[in-house]
Length: 323
Image 1 (cartoon, rainbow, N blue to C red):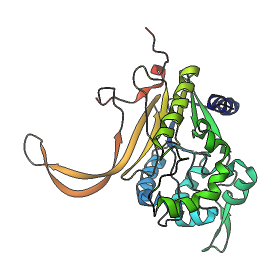
Image 2: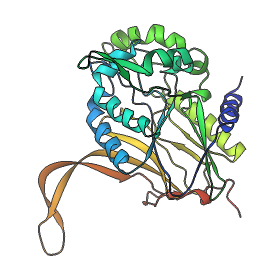
Image 3: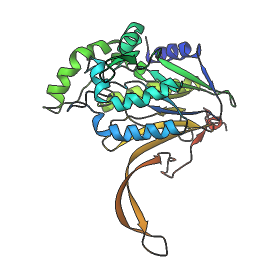
């Protein structure tokens, strides 16, 4: 089965339960957090505070949180409870979204074991609370999706949100092999010898380009907006490009990236630690820092010349571009 066929099947399945929304609704999409056990092998650990406070901001602003795959690193850590304990503050916040009907979860290749409802019921519905000395609810009733389709009422535009491993042959069919080999590979070959994982679209530039090429062609052929993750490379289209977006990841060295949908627009943003400055003269020149760190949100949207542009309106996402 080709990459195009796999993407089409995921889209058609998601269309059966498409989610209608209006300009009043707000969504934030993160993917590829790869939450681990908060040990040396946890790629999420250094960004956990960034993620927590960014997600808190979205919670307070009334966003729906869409976790677009590979939220938990289950290829390396087979026992989810170890991850939940290590990042209990993250799951406490996600539970608040879930309790208010504002959490949508999609599985990727690193947490594809959750495609099985029995696994979801056994590991995600509840957990044992040590303080209360009993089992309590976590994400009771949560549904794990392969993909979702959002339909914008004002324009009729559909947004296909999918992790993106469907465009990756190895990770579509042999994800289970990663669960057997990835712990050894990461602990020995990657951490000690510095070798990159050749099966990973995030670490293999050739594979990254190939996978993204499949998704861009699919968006072009179907004239369909698609938001993916998987490759860890954030992306937004500019004039003349197919309507393909990538939300990046939460394991970058100094930032996390996300896609925002609000007011009928789509924006690619990053959250990072910035340093406050204060004005030192009457002309408003920034010349001295007060050395106070703060969490900053920044648009990552530019045109082909590198000039910043505002969020893209859904109604403008037309491909091919009219003459």
